[in-house]
Length: 385
Image (cartoon, rainbow, N blue to C red; front, side, top):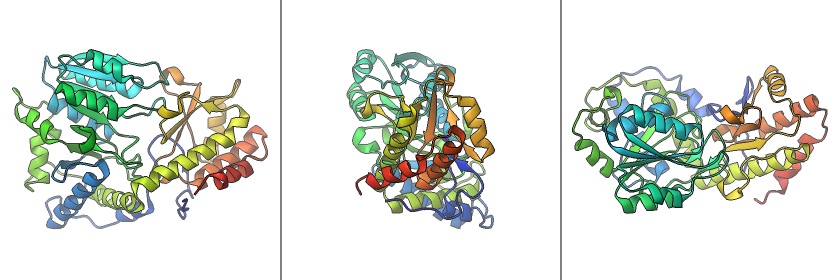
């Protein structure tokens, strides 16, 4: 299942929840010569990207897809800018930092925001969503909450939202591209991710997919979209009609195209299996040291961001500084979980044995705990093929 990537981790080992190491094919694509953003070859490349995004997101055959020239947060903001008008009722699911960011953004665009909440480390309860759906024009939820390692039940929430008639926007930043995503089957209207997450492309692009229902809501706006840069109409002008809107980062498109193709060639089911097997091996290896899953319910653990509660008395900041001195980056908790957890990225090219083998070797030295590498190898070999 695991194929090592040559020379990928020669300089620095990124085990963070993003960005992830750039895929070698994406790295090579960055070296292509520049073409103009209105060049026919670039439009052809963009068409292939759009088709690949339809496959990655599991959309209808003609769903509008595009790349926004910004990171995943721009993908988040563009949804609210285009689909929310002042006074609209927006229901936001909040169980971590990025759900909270959604609520803040919706409020800045004039929405009357209500929140469905869950404690940190727990998933949103669909019943709580159902109880507050009345009157909502839009519902927003993070599929994989990066700040806590929680996987929210998007299919169940989507079914409730679809029945209500509201639109649904989904943050798929740590899920899309690493496992199957079913936009059409689930009934999602707007979804986005970041190029630098599961696809291991360079940061700076936000792949989006927009349903016909969402485009109809956009067309019925009473006021112009306040965010000109990502106005859905302007995006369609460029991506569909091939007319000028703004200058896209062509070389990032090259790299993204290469990384997306690599992911689709590997297969989303195979990528899901790869991350699950590696995650189990890491947990097995670190458990005797006192590391435990932060999310207690196995069904709601986010596979791509492994959140581990630290052992009692563990020197979080000190160990991470020592790892950084060895060119290994590990991310701690965010906000209330700072000093409480580690968040290990298992997305794209980070979800390989090589970088985690290096982490285990470094921890052997730093903690004086021999046998971690051997236990890691044994755990990998014990996972069914």
